[in-house]
Length: 69
Image 1 (spheres, rainbow, N blue to C red):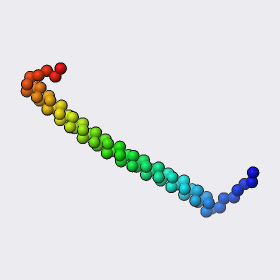
Image 2 (spheres, one colour; image 1 turned 90 degrees about the horizontal axis):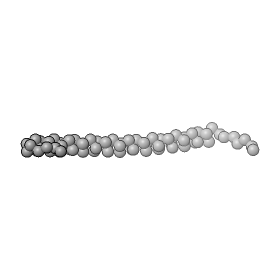
Image 3 (cartoon, rainbow, N blue to C red; image 1 turned 180 degrees about the vertical axis):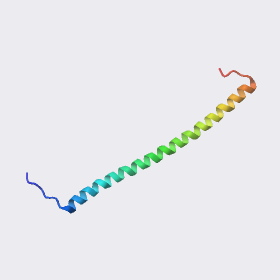
Image 4 (cartoon, rainbow, N blue to C red; image 1 turned 135 degrees about the vertical axis):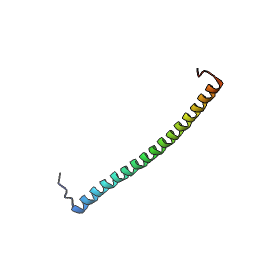
């Protein structure tokens, strides 16, 4: 098999293509991380609401002298 010579320009294009692929993957990861952060924030907000409901239920149970069981 004959050795094919690669020019500097061809090599530069190949390397650039590789970097472009990596850049695209990194941008995809950034988007995924942003989505995860948004989801975690929503979950935290829901947990705060659940905690508030639990406190209100505890208050009602205590006021009415009702056992939690």
